[in-house]
Length: 146
Image (tube, rainbow, N blue to C red):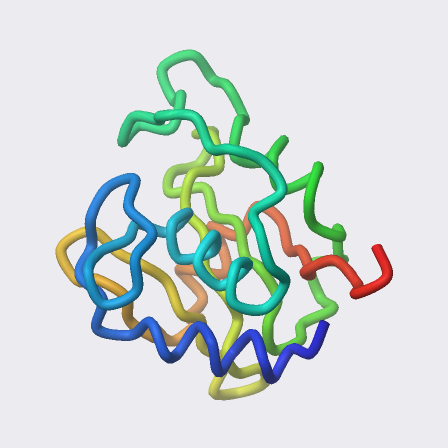
């Protein structure tokens, strides 16, 4: 799957308002909804139906539901193997479950990622050291033959 194609798709969602559990470009999405929408645009039908989820992403139970889903459908990458189009999974607090997603847009000194962020909608943010410290895992979309 072309990283450039994924980045173009992700950037096309910029400006979409934040809306929990939604996945409609221009109307509303959350971080998972953004990933789901990009999946539909670049791959096709979603690989599984997403059950309803709370804003805390199973944090009180310590359930790594989002990480397990990523491991089922995406290719795991090494943390330092950055490429445009990578799926980034973040822990918002140390010791908490991973519950935020973004898509890497640029690498190197000006690294950035596109994500749906509560209170901001879909934006492109610098992948700064504070964000990098929260990075729990890095994935790639499946290869076309997968």
